[in-house]
Image (cartoon, rainbow over all chains, first blue to last red; front, side, top):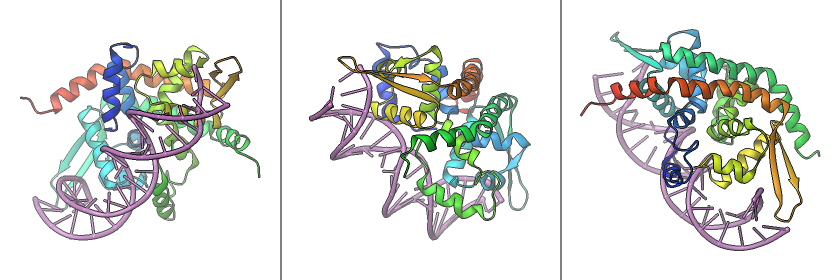
Length: 132
Length: 132
DNA sequence: CGGAATCCTGCCTGATACTG
DNA sequence: CAGTATCAGGCAGGATTCCG
């Protein structure tokens, strides 16, 4: 997602001295897929093709703008396909591509981790936060 | 990361009608770990304990503010430990906890995916973008 | 060195209106 | 239905400065 205008400049500025992670293209891709909405959209589509409004409903909390933007980016990156069916109200369906499914499988691991270790994290927070 | 003030309200507002992903605590945790800096910090610490400046150098492009903020949050969530050694310039070391390492193993999959499929994504972008 | 505090830019959200 | 467009406001995030 486009949240890297000023940071990009810094990356380029530092790249002369440190090309470890900063200049690596895989770092840029990792930046992109480590995005909240990207993760959730990919997760949502694991159940098969879905329409715009379906995704919107499942990810309650996303604005139309960000959902559209995220879907466009993922389409551009070849992770999902956008199919327009010229019915009377037009129908638009989003579906993971082969590439998208390979990412979804990895992301499923993240989802499982979150569900599995949620209680541990909540416990850690409770002991970290000041007790009243 | 704290990027959910107004959105939280929408989540709560919609939760009455749809409690699928929105109200699930694992969704909130998934939101948090689907963060660019979180991913990169966890990845960086896979090689063992590191000092603040070491992490900062490896993640060229992160501001001190965001790095501090991210490290604090991860410490609060019990994913890493912060150790202060009272040397003359103070030395602060960050290290993954057991819980943090379990997340790191999953995230390693993301890193591998990014490195493996980077070319496919770049090719998809090239064919999506308008040809000159 | 490792932050904390400050200011400031600009993205994201939220609301609304308008196409096809 | 599935957007696109626009505008206000808030808050994330960057740059800079200062402190233990």
